[in-house]
Length: 273
Image (cartoon, rainbow, N blue to C red):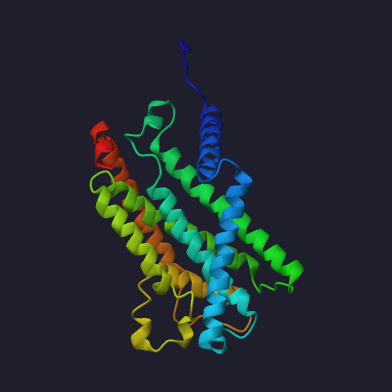
């Protein structure tokens, strides 16, 4: 209680930050369920339900032939996993502890650590869910063959990074307009159910329809990921650079907005939520 903290070296400060991030990640993971294993199981169950729902829909509508030649379930999962990683990261960052949160009263806790912990905990759960589902599918059903695993993993990480950027922008606006941000967060996630392009490939779209989707960074990420997953698909209408640049711009805007919002922090913001 009366401990006096002296100056720390750079290494000591880094260790302190890493320790804070680690404990914040554990706390964030346990928000979903008291048992960390159950958090993973619930997330896996949600992903499996998504995949099965789209598999049944494609089968009933007779759209399986319009997919990429190869493993049809892998085609569906390549879109579902990126979509879930992106949207869940955005939601976790938007729901991170703000400057007026009681947690910020405990030094050296700050909003940067809370945001980083929210984003990393989501990536941790999504990666574990992805690996477990692919392992079960590989062992129990059919061997999983990914043409360029590192490229596909890079697109998943880019989807996570762009979700962090979008969530950070929403988080910086949230204390000022909490109800508006809640609506925008929901609308963005619902729009991406279609606009992300997880149900079709960009190469199959005519130009007038392509213009309706190519504004979305997640559309580019999913299409590029399928180019890395399947040997017989080469994306012609999407790029890796566009979502990366958009994510960097959103991250910069979000950091600037969060810094300004933190400077204006007020305990009365809690009554607006």
